[in-house]
Length: 266
Image (cartoon, rainbow, N blue to C red; front, side):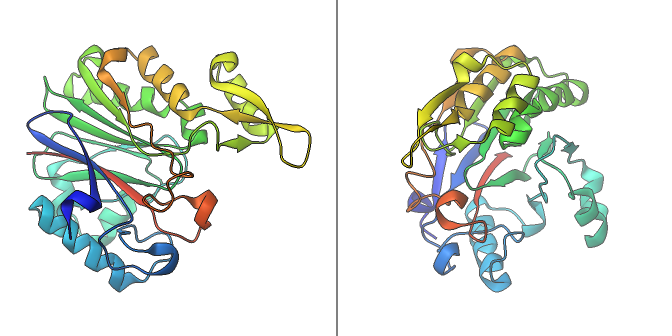
């Protein structure tokens, strides 16, 4: 594994590692080529395990400390406690079922989420040495998952939102994110300022469709939760455009690899 080509790393702080994986430097083939560590998308189990092993070696952790929830486009958050690692395999699997955000304050544990156009958000609370990884697809974004996760961090660790640092990783851009009226209506119902995050654009076959800016929507959610704008870094990398480097379900199909955006305290 070549760290420089396989990991896009973020400078969130000196006492942690934060990154998103690329498609490069791994073992997978075809739509999973080459670096997919997510076991929930139909990839060959041996290739997934090989890539997980390589990532754990790079991070210097045991494979049990690489956490991947089974996401369901909801807004549930799970805190990873020490007791999680004393549970058996079935108990850990059940705990991670239906989870779209993780929080922890345990060093040496990499929490992360899987995306392939959806928005990954990583949070760092330097004051309380706590972290979060959030899967914000359009449903999660409309459901204010970042706000709910920050609330969970406040309850668990005493996190002050204004001291958080945030990264929005590679994901689909507004230009590529064409949606139906039902998606637009979901954001209206969630009280988003639609003139800021949505624009109607012409289609190639005539007519027009809504395009939604998930980056802007999530920045707004973070700001409304108390995170300072100057503490929010948007990678600006569109997965649909750069599908040769980052997995994109809209480009490659649902049966394809996933980006893993992870964060780990040292």
